[in-house]
Image (cartoon, rainbow, N blue to C red; front, side):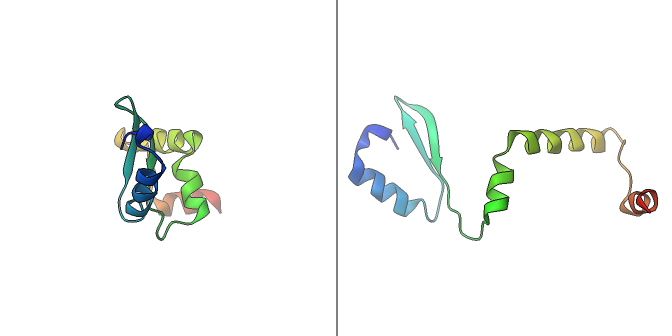
Length: 80
């Protein structure tokens, strides 16, 4: 939806955004998204938008793919 569409269209998009993600654009380029939050708590929302947390996840996935991960049992053994 183009941002300049006006308040009436924005209200309709917000209603629609309760069920599906709506992409807002300015001159054809994405600038924001209206995302449904049913069942999402504040902590989950904060983590899913945290650059630092997402970087930690990416690093963890790379380590897992490279075989540098340990099992849960091994982690528990090391922590005791």
